[in-house]
Image (cartoon, rainbow, N blue to C red; front, side, top):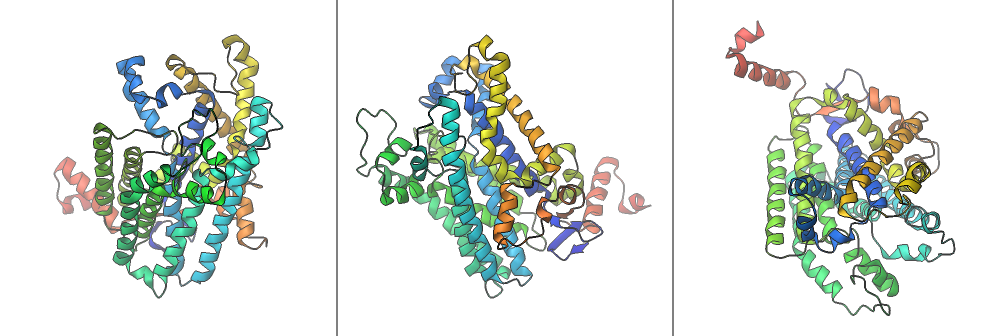
Amino acid sequence: MANDESNNRVENFGKPPSRIATLDFTRGLAIFLMTFFHGFNHVFDPSWFTSDPSVIFDTIHPIAIAPIGFLVYLGTWNSFFLLVSITVNTLGMVKSAQKGANLEKILLRRIITGLFLFIADYIIEALLYYGYFGNGIKNGAWSAISRFWLHFFGIRTLQIIAWSIVITSVINYFLLRKNGHQKYVRNMIIFGILALSVLISTQFVQNAVDNMPWESPAGYTGGGWPDIGIQEYNASFRTWIFVQIAGGLEPFFPYLCTSFVGAMIGLTVCLAKPPKYITPFFGSTGLLMMILGAVLIALGYPMVFDTRSSLPVFLLQLGGQMGLLMLFFRRVEFKGRGKVFADNWLSRELRLWSMASLSIYALEIFDFVPASFMNLIAGRFVGHNFLLRTFNQPHQMGYALLYACFSLLCYIGLIRVWSLANFTGSFEWFLLRVQNGFRKPKLNRLDVDLILNKTGWIIFVDQASDIKQVWIHRIQQKFKKTDEEILQ
């Protein structure tokens, strides 16, 4: 039945908040994977591999290469969080336009969100795991105040999300005015051109920035731009600008392409009835990206993924992310399975992660808790300090993966306990207050019982007729019966 908050079909009989199960699940999945790989990366030093990826064929048993390669591939998926975030941001903005909301106010809220994320990013990176306190805990270097300065010359996941929210929201503001939400084809073409333009120009922009006359510290043996050591040594406003454009880890080029693709997906899923061809269209485009990325690597293009991803690696990343998102839409919303999918145990767990995804990202420093515990019970016996990256050999990868699983279990416990208080004090909790001018807002988005148990799930087929036809077709295929026989 229709819901006031959505033009799509909603699997519910009341007036609950309406959500798309795939987007809740995949946003939770993105932060879940990120947390797991953070735990692995905190204890394992892969420099033997990142300096020359081909060495894996000489050091790893052939049977283990495929699963390890898949894990490495998933470990580069930081931008999956970006893709889903911008999809959700665009979806919300278009829904507001469809209801006739004041677009200026909507844009202002998005800009406030972007500014909040910039501030949150600085707090996280300058103070927490990779910042002052994290460096002090790991190395005992409590006088390293350069951590407050160094972070200005890097661009990570939260910063590119902040930039992307502001940039795509400004574009959407101009597209959605004067009933612009009804001009789906025009809007898709504009974002498609923008995405393609960023993709095509990425290699040229990166080469131009890399080849500028950057100075290196005496005796510096790093990789040069976009290495953080080069950026900090060339500290200036000019350097800061070029860090945003082409620095490490997730600069505008190429990651604005991911943002624009996310906007295109968001524009599509908020249609009254999204067409079924969107999944093969986006899925096939993603597959072509992956094929092109593999071909470029075969032709000798560099395979860089530990600083700023090279173009072939980016194509492999975005193509796989688009394919996974389309697979879920195909199997859930286009099959009318929103509620069934949302209520399974794994989906409920990841939807819980989705509710506090920003806070979980910010709490990377919590990994010191399981690391300290492992030091206490096993560190002296295995000869490793779990606060540092002391696992650095191929045969030690399994130990690092076991630690990452243990760390993940600790985060699961933390999130479940925090959810009992509806994530009070989280970054999301503060953001809702900032957006409402510090007036007490409705915190429905953080009401765990409401989101987990009382949500209406949007599907892309008619609640009665389309789902019935799907099951009739399945029974026909299995038992070779007519429509009349089945309905009897």
